[in-house]
Structure formats: C-alpha cells, structure tokens
Image (cartoon, rainbow, N blue to C red; front, side, top):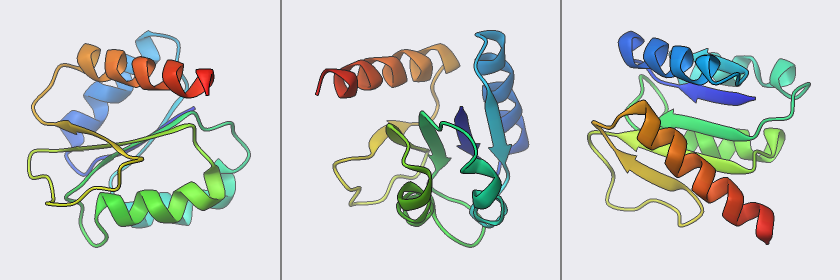
Length: 118
C-alpha cells in the first residue's frame, strides 16, 4: 500500500487516481494529524511507501514521516514539496514540485529496487 499525505486536494486526488490506475492500493490523507489518527488501522497493511508533502497544516512532512515510520515500517519514504527545507534526513527521498505523477512513480520504483537489493 502507498500512503499519501497531501493537503492540496487536487494533487492528492491526482496521485491517488494515477497510482490506482496502475493497480496500486492507496490511502490518502489531507493532513499529518489525519494520517496519525489512522496509524492503528494502517498497521494492518504492508506499507511499501509513504509520500508526504513537506508543508502541511500542523505538523510538517518530515515530522510525520519520522513518527509514522516507526509504526508502519515502510520500505521507502518520500517528501514532495514546492518549498523544501534546508535539511532533509538522507533516508528520505526528495522530489520538488511540480512533477508528473509518472516521474514520481519511476523515482519510487528506482529506490524500491535499490532497497530490495540491500
């Protein structure tokens, strides 16, 4: 399953539709708080990837990823944003907006393949 946290509804729905068209199971949230409230339910799934916007209402994407990672144990964490912070932990893949969903998917797969080889 892919978890997407994005406060911009148009982007959230675009990514959800794109990944679902590829046969991926997707769960989306408009805020980090909404996703955190659902962590217990998400633990029932095999989470391959967390994709989070950096600029979210309340908590930022890095804080969310670090909190969720401990419980969900995703293979890959990605941060997407038009306004990236000065520091991003090296184990989080960063993509600057704007991008095409196909490029996000391609980048995600490249990193998942690398992680599978380790």
